[in-house]
Length: 152
Image (cartoon, rainbow, N blue to C red):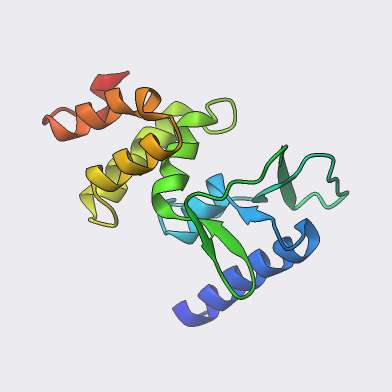
């Protein structure tokens, strides 16, 4: 399978998930990390923010129910919405019961090392979301020469 076929297949899965989740739904967390090529594996479920009370029997979807769907840091696409990279990274630390800390640290460091984003952009998003205190120790570990694991 070629890279473009794989990309079309991945986008097709995200589009189908968004159709089930509704027009305001947002691809998030592990699925967003895979979308930005920050995982070494494909998640077995599509992770998606949906309005509270929304349910499905589809085992391939992992709905994260929210009273209010996020508006900041959302890339609105033709077929689906996805959290932007910086929001995705902040969300990984904010949802520590859903995303293990080791994964959050790894993808944060990887995204900055690979220049997919900058520390400044991540800090700006964390400030916009009032989550700067959650993220700051890990960013300091990356910026000041240690590994992000030093911040644990």
